[in-house]
Image 1 (cartoon, rainbow, N blue to C red):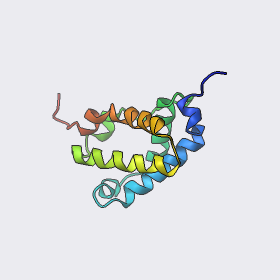
Image 2: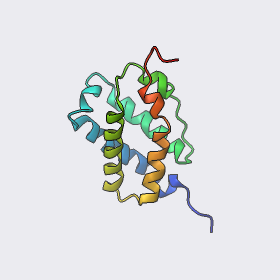
Image 3: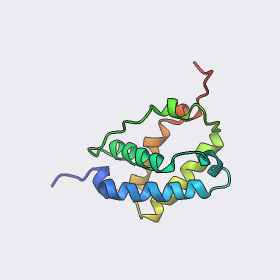
Image 4: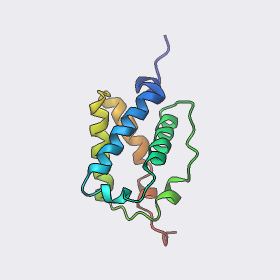
Length: 124
């Protein structure tokens, strides 16, 4: 029997959507990160983050929003903000009993964009 994909182990689109919704609830409630989303279209962010993680996990969805760097140039994230967001993502994954190896794979999919998330408009 073929081994299941990360996408399948996470419960497909609906399972990933549930994790993303929980993650955004945590982001919005966080004292340090919540203010970044004060003027954001959170429903669109939830949708695009779900598509991003679905694609990264091997699902059929494709992320078709603005490139990560371009979408975050106006956001003054620091490395500490990224660390906190990863903590919250891990909490969301744990909430849905995602096994540690699979949670690590999800975090790695996001972590590869850290430099894009920290980029500033005047960076080369």
